[in-house]
Length: 110
Image (cartoon, rainbow, N blue to C red; front, side, top):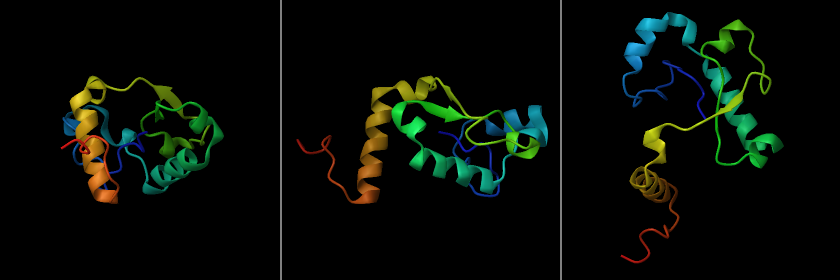
């Protein structure tokens, strides 16, 4: 999922070319940290999100500034090409496993 562009939190700092998008769209696409937290909470407890696993959930840019509602304004969108690359998925899994202290089936054979 994406909580949206929340410059005050640092969550978007690794997104490629985000500054180009911001310059084109302006402040209308910026979300609040509260909005991002609420989407994360919804993802964790929502039956709908759980039943539609493997989806990329998002909302229209800047919706938190226009009275957006969760889950009404959330929708499932296709993941980008970078996320579809198997090597990127494996790297993400390895980093996540290391950070959480779980064993990784990917490195079990090494």
